[in-house]
Structures are given as C-alpha cells and as structure tokens.
Image: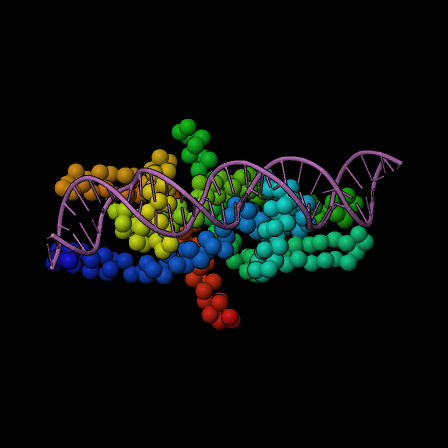
Length: 126
Length: 126
DNA sequence: GTAAGTAGTATAACGAAGTATACCAGTATG
DNA sequence: CATACTGGTATACTTCGTTATACTACTTAC
C-alpha cells in the first residue's frame, strides 16, 4: 500500500465509523432468521390479527397448507409465534405473536413502504 | 356471524385503517425483488463503498464467485447497480449503486438493527 | 345425509438456488 | 521466474424450497 492509498484508507475509516464486519454479520443473522418466501408474510398476517390456520392461509396469496404448516411449526419452535390449543368443542388452534415476533415490525413496515413506492414508480414510468 | 362478532369486526376495521390486501401485496413485491440469500448483502456492500468484484466478494462471508457473478449480472439488468468498465491498463470493472439501490437503505438499516439486537438478546439469556 | 368448513398430514416430484472446485488470460509484485 | 491478484467462466453436484394432489377426522349447517 503506497502513501496515497494509505491516506485514502485512513480517510475512509474516519468518514465511516461503522463497523463493516459487525454490520454484515447482523444483516446475515437477520436474513437467516427470515429466510424463505413465507416467514415475513406469516408474521405480518399474525401481527395483523389473524389467529387461525385458515385465516392466515387465506390472507397470504399463493401459500399452500403444506408450507404454512411447515413454517408455523418451525416458527413455533423458534419462539416467533405461540400455538395455543383452545379446548373448546371443536378444538380451536390459535397462533399468536410473541414479543420476538413484534420486533420485526419496523422491518416489515419498511418493506411495505418500499413495495408501495415500487408500484408507484412502475405506474409513473412503465 | 352474531351481533358480538359483528361489533368486534367493525371495531377492528375502524381501529385498523390499513388496507390488508394492498400491504401483503407490497410486502410480497419487495420480497420478490430481494429474494435469495445474497442481494441484500451485495446492495449493502456496494452502498458501503465497495466497488470492485473481489472487494465485494471479500466483504460478504460465504459467497462464491459464481453466486456473486450471477447476482451482479441480474442486478445490473434490473437497474439496481451499474457496471462500468474503466479503460485503464489493466481494465478495471466498477460496480456502483443506483438511486434505486439506495432506496433499500431503510430496510437494510432496520435489518442490521434487528440483527444486532438479536445477538444482544442471545448474549443476555443464552 | 350431504356439502362445506377446520386443522392439518402424507407422498411424490420438480426445479431453482446454492456449493465446490477448477480453471483462464492478463497484470503486477518480489 | 514464481507467486498472487483481477474479473470472472465452466462443470458437476446437492439440497431443499415449493408445488400438486389427495386424504383424515371432526363439526356445523342445510
């Protein structure tokens, strides 16, 4: 590394106090937890008040019972949601959000915001 | 639906002015554009100042040249990034963010925030 | 009794996403 | 001269996400 490069490097570090390695790790952690096509829509649906299997299923276009079943199981295991059996007759199964689940609120809101702006852009110049 | 349920439903609608269908669509649009394991880390890397192939590659743990090459090609085609050939000797290839790319800033920041908080939680109660 | 809804499971199969590894031509470094 | 870097491509392979379809057991409504 020559003097010019060294100077550039030091300027870069000074102007950018963020820790790159830590950030990319945080980003990849988040992406790992949210991986796949369905977890975010499911979290969104449950946080929006949907509690029962068929209600959640109907609220997410394109999802199949199998995928919903699989994801709900995985998300229960990971404390993202809570599965409650209401011992009525007939038995009712309720899925509810945990605090953990609510912590994705900001990410989901930003994604909704982006998606809406995206559609707007497409309408304006197609 | 009985009277009690009807009342609850109407209260729910009044207290929740958001359009569910529009939101889930916006969410799924966003997820579609960002699908896969690598686009968000790549956007982040380029927005953080990495410009050249090997720099981007080194900044993203786990990515292979093949995946990076594939994604960069796709993202160039979709106007997410710009590929510039600097006709020096040797030829240098530069990838730079577009405005479109910058529009993911808020989502990425929220994801980094979540990932950091997540690690913090794990440290506190393992 | 029959149709429709609830909460799923079972099975099979497809294909995209991702991994691993090697390789290339050109250039720079020691 | 050997090594290592650059910007990728080629090939082969694996995995697992996803779809499609059917089915169960129970309940409610007509």
